[in-house]
Image (cartoon, rainbow, N blue to C red; front, side):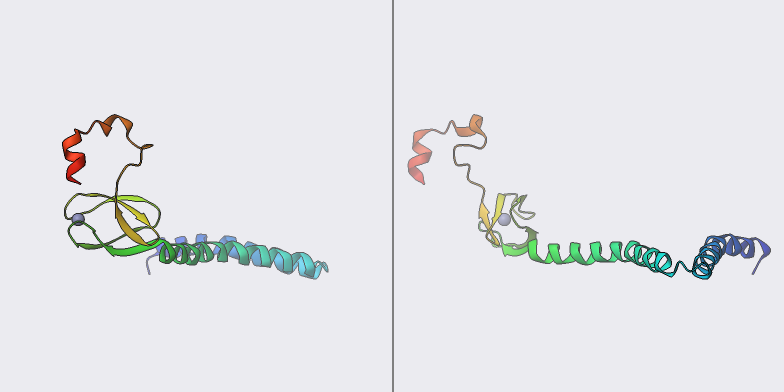
Length: 124
Ligand SMILES: [Zn+2]
């Protein structure tokens, strides 16, 4: 271990030593409850990212939908209640009720693109 890294390690340890000293001091002053609540807060601070990570994974599992593209049968995953594009055929898709649906505007979406000739409407 070179002297430089040793110094760095000491620098990293210093806040912890200070924390320990403060805890010991508070405990010796009969402020155990303060130490306990501080430890709880500290533990929560440490746990928060873990909980957030687990929560995020849970959310992802709930919202991740694996289904087939209704146009080309290509299977891929998307987020529930979102819009996405099929990576295979480029079709605009909507994820609803854990299934992919073709993105068909129902009046409210993209009003400018509604000018469709009557012929193609009858073809449907
Ligand atoms: Zn497709």
